[in-house]
Structure formats: C-alpha cells, structure tokens
Length: 203
Image 1: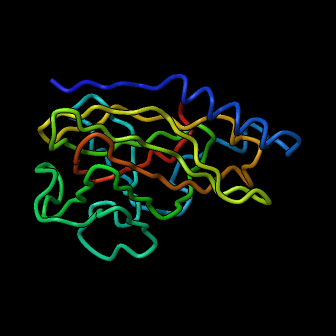
Image 2: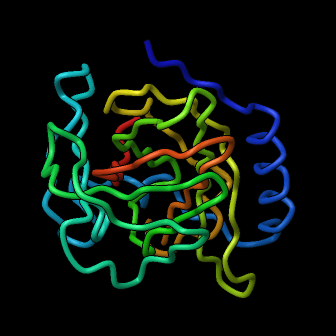
C-alpha cells in the first residue's frame, strides 16, 4: 500500500517566504482567475478518473517522456529509461537515482490554486520524491516552493493531488501564472512518468 508523507512545515515556510517576497505587488481580482479552458489551448484529459479524480488535466510539455525534452533540466544522473506507467504511453519514463532531480519546462496555469499529479514508483525501500513548484515572478526571477515529500509505492501508481501555494495570486497577469515543477529523489532511486497539471480554477 502506498503511503504519502506531507511536509506541512516546509509548505508553511515556503508560503511565508513567498508571501514576504510578493508583498506590495498588485493582486488580480478573483473574477480574472476563473477560466473554462487551458490557458494555452492544450488538450485536456482525465488521466486519473479511475482513481476518483475526474478533473481535467493537461500533460506538461514532454511529460510522458516519449519525445523531445527541450526545456527540461536533468541533473545528478536523471535519465530517460525504457518502460513506464502501464496505464499511459508506457514506452519510457524518467529514472531518478538518489540525489538526482528534474525540472519541467514552464507552463501556464489559469489560477492561483492549480494542482498537479503524476505516476511514479520507488526502486528502494526508503525511496522518496520531494516535489517543488517553481514560479516565474516579475522582477524577482524564479522562486521554488517546497511542498512536502511523497513516499512512493514499489508499483506504478498516481500520487495524491499536489497543491501549489495560493500566495502567487498577487503576481498573476490576466489570470495566469507560469509554473514549472521540480522533483528530487532522496534516500533511494525512483521513477516518474506522465506528469499532468490541472490548469483550471474550479475549487
């Protein structure tokens, strides 16, 4: 049975840090945060419907590891390998040895509260993946917020929905924000595949 460990202290620290950094920036009205489609006209699907999540998601650019990884940043031995999520396009996935990390390209979201999910599995008893959300902020550059840690199952399975911090509301322009996702393997190797973002505001 898979288990998830959420670092609430890390999330709170990240939110406070971001709140300080964003203080004084103009807020966007809540009405501007409502949208009925993806901000970049991406195709939407329901990849997690069989797990009770019927939200519409878009695939992060290159997030199924079946093509060009232009815009991705891989470090510490992260690499594409054969095999992957059997419920997806499963030809390839991304292998993360302990200490390795990967950062996706930036993609737009329509609200301050997007969520994201992916399929993953561990390859060691203590393998854990630490996700971060990276925001592209005017004047301040890129800001990475830790949002906890997930201890994964040895079998391919979806993670729980991972939420971003709402403090980005003040930097949204026209109701959108640019977000990248970073994943770091600690304590042991893991694999990730089929990374999706829920770009809509329906909360």
